[in-house]
Amino acid sequence: MVRQTQSELLIEVLTELQEIKKGLPNGEIVLIQKSLEDLEEGQNSLKREIRTIQKRLFNPDDGLIVQTNKNTDFRDDHDKSMPMYNDIITDFKNVLTWKSNVTKALWFIYSAIIGVIIKLLFWN
Image (cartoon, rainbow, N blue to C red; front, side):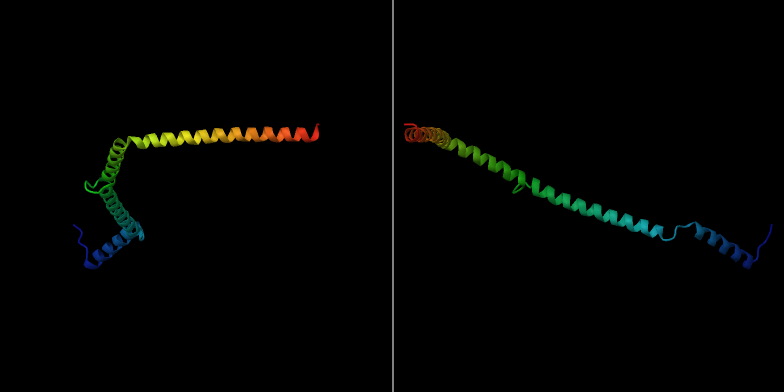
């Protein structure tokens, strides 16, 4: 068995440490660790935002879905309680159609009257 002295052992350990040090990436481990921490922080932030959105959507007291359902129920009840409202809208649409037709007829009549006046003035 070969016995090494302390100084030879120390030199061998230092040489091995230098070899290990050469194989390690310079600062890359710290950058990778920082990137992973940032990624984890981003995921946690995203989870918090998703929870907030879920609470706003699915809250059983005043969530968006509950409010939409209440609005739909209100409109259905309102339409059932006021059938005359639909009749008024139908009548109004009919009046607008009649007005459009009368306007077209009046333009035709005005054009005809102007044509007759021009004929009487110039071709007599």
